[in-house]
Image 1 (cartoon, rainbow, N blue to C red):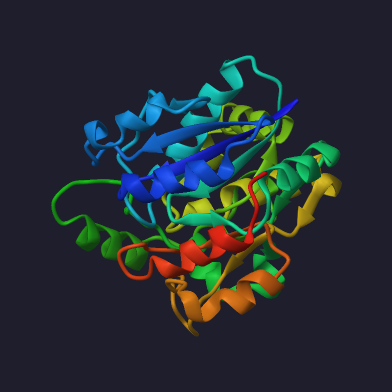
Image 2 (image 1 turned 180 degrees about the vertical axis):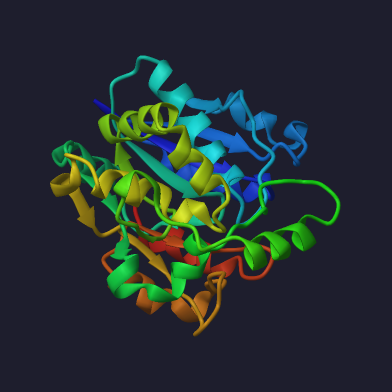
Length: 282
C-alpha cells in the first residue's frame, strides 16, 4: 500500500517543485491538478520527477465555486483508475508544506488505513453562520452576464433551500486525507444522487461541505476522525488563511501537525528554508 498526494495547483511551479521534494518517499506518489486557467507548459517539467503524474481532465477552477469540488473528484477518479493500491489520497494545495518527515507521515496513514482525516462541525449546531451558504442559491459556478442579478432575484422570490436526501450538513475545511474507499464512495454517491450534486453546485464554498456531509451521513461515519493534521492560521473574520512567515516557526513546529498552509516564497522564502533545515526527509 502507498499514499497518493494530490496537489491542487494554479501558480508558482517552482514552489510546487520544492513541495514535491519534501513529499517524496518510497511509499508515495504525487499527482498534480493544474487549474485549466493556468498554462500547463509552465508546470509540465515537473513530470520528469520520479513518481509525479499530472491529472489529465483539468477543470477551470473558480474560488468559492463547485468547480473546486469537480477538480478534486476528477483527480480522485484518475488516481483510483490507476489501479495502484493507495491507502489514502492526501489533498494538498500548491502552497502547503510538510512539518514532519515524509516517511513518518506515510507510516501514520498506512497504520490507519481505515480512517479518513478531515475537520468538521455540525452546521446546524456549531457552525450556524454557514447556514446562508446552504439556504441561498449561489450561481458562482455559472458564467453568464448578470448572473449575480439573477442570483439576487432567485433568492428574493424562492423559499430557502433545504438539504436534499435528508442529509444533515457538516463541513469546515476542504483539506483532508481520505481513504481510497471513502473517496470512491463520495464519487459514486454524487453520480447516483444527482439532486445532491445539483444542490452543492449552487452552494458557495461547496468544497468545505461536500465530503464531510456525504461521509458523516454514511455507514463510514465512525471511520472519520475530526482532525485534518494541518496548521492553518486565520485572522478573525477572514475567509482566506494568513501567509505564514518566519515569525510563525515556533507555532508551526510545536503544533504537532503534518502540514501547514499557506506559504508564499515570494513573500517569505526564509520560513521554508528554516523548515528544510529542521525537518529531515531521510
